[in-house]
Length: 246
Ligand code: BJW
Image (cartoon, rainbow, N blue to C red; front, top):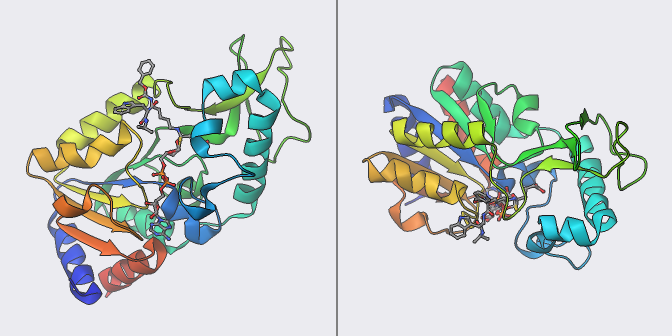
């Protein structure tokens, strides 16, 4: 489908939806300068995300895993929301977007003004103690890593969800409730390779809901999506929101 037709169809679907939700992944923050997990730019030093975002990697080498998070915090600290984040915030303001499910830990949706967000994989600016209940919030990358607990001196860890770990109970309940309720889902910048988030668009489709996908490449959703646009999210959603204001 030519891009202009795709945008017109997206506008039509958005305007006619009763309960639209969105699912975002690392690709929505790529135009803000934050590297995605997979693909050519997805490597940090020589490691893949799957080798670092695990409890076993942390157990084996907490300093290495903390260094990765410290490096990413440095990038996130400098990043600003892009037109895709702002468009989703605007859609929420207009009452058109009911809820946003994000796999991202960068907090850029909040910075852009979105309020109804469920951060299913945690937030990079928080850490929790591996032994006691102590939690902390950072406003800049820690000076030295690994970080120790000020209460019990044990290791702190990033308050994010790693492979093999359950998602926060409230987040997972809300995410599935939203998927069952939605008649339209915007799926933006995610490879859909990680469960359970990857199942969410298919739950919407199963009950005759519709899906709009915006991604640079095809994913397993592409053949089933109502509209699929292969273009940068920021550029595409800017056009959508500009046209919506007219
Ligand atoms: C653009 C763009 C631009 C680029 N514009 N687009 C069922 C089947 C098989 C396996 C499992 C299953 N259920 C569970 C599993 C295991 C596992 C899993 O999914 N494994 C797969 C690898 C097969 N899942 C889990 O372990 C999850 N836990 C769980 O299910 O627990 C169950 C349990 C219950 C009870 C007890 C114990 C366990 C947890 C998953 C946690 C994932 N964590 C990470 C790290 C988070 C913290 C951090 O940020 O450091 O989450 S891994 C990483 O992947 C991160 C992301 O959120 C996630 C998804 O990646 P995302 O966002 O899709 O990024 P990319 O890089 O993959 O893709 C970017 C996309 O953007 C690409 O498509 C580009 O084309 C596109 N793009 N620029 C538009 N400008």
